Length: 162
Image: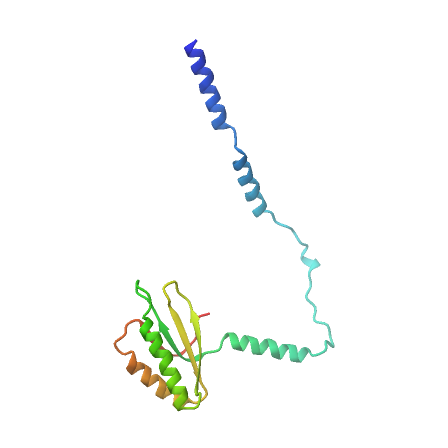
């Protein structure tokens, strides 16, 4: 009798182990959905530019201007990096103060934008100026201000991170 009960219980356990669960079927179904491909005939899709489209040259010039903006090079990029303990908050504050002071003295010669790119406060300040002389004097001041700081990188004629 004990052998029969043992045999029946082991068969019951094995059937539960072998039978697929509802979750397994759901996973297989989801995987199948991801790999589904829809075929399209090659000659069914055509791109045609109609002749005489109004304002076509204007649309083309807008596209060209947008692509130029994507590849715009900033004059100076000041990067605040981290080496495991976050970026230097005091250096960020001193840079913002220096830009503000420089703009007050030189009638708003500098424009900047901030691009955050890291988890520990890493960011780039992209500085642009129309006057090259003002920019050169600003870069000289920044290099002197941050000469001993390894967490601040100053790069000229660099692209800003997107």
